[in-house]
Image (cartoon, rainbow, N blue to C red):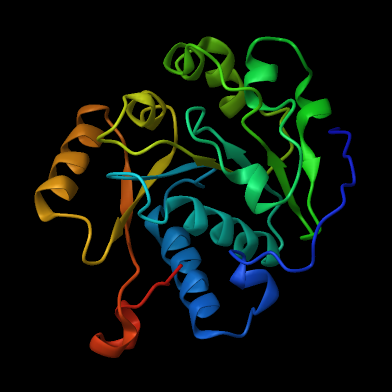
Length: 232
């Protein structure tokens, strides 16, 4: 049983619109993503899902944090893991310390149950990145990482992993083939078609199960509502 630690949090977490304004149109679109994920795999439950992007600043960390909230609001026991060991952000989003986390667990400097933190969202826990390591790729491709994701003793229905952009480093590809599914975030007006195609090809080379893509930052004034997923 994971030992949880209550932490102080601000009530005004700007990025988590699904928490502060669950009735907003944007929150509704995150629930649509949640529903689509549930329909993405009929034959088996998706437990380990990673979210990545083609390049930096396309909204993947905001997307995965809000997705974690709506999944938890549905009653799932959710663990959000910051696997972006090069530019971690989960501890900023949830306003918590990052003195120990995923890297501490993988290097056996801390036990998993000691590194996981409780959020003020019911059913949602987080595992921050921990100290930035010199060898993130080696850590993410380690047997310890695979065991963390596949162990049945980790008591969560869904584990979400925030990973670095696909076209920048190999980290996302290393995790893709040990996750049950991958969601790719692209940014309207920023992500080039060639970049999205290349990212898809790299994930497929890693034998990833691509569940779909989230279009972020779409200008709602010039779009149909059902194509609008969110704006940071």
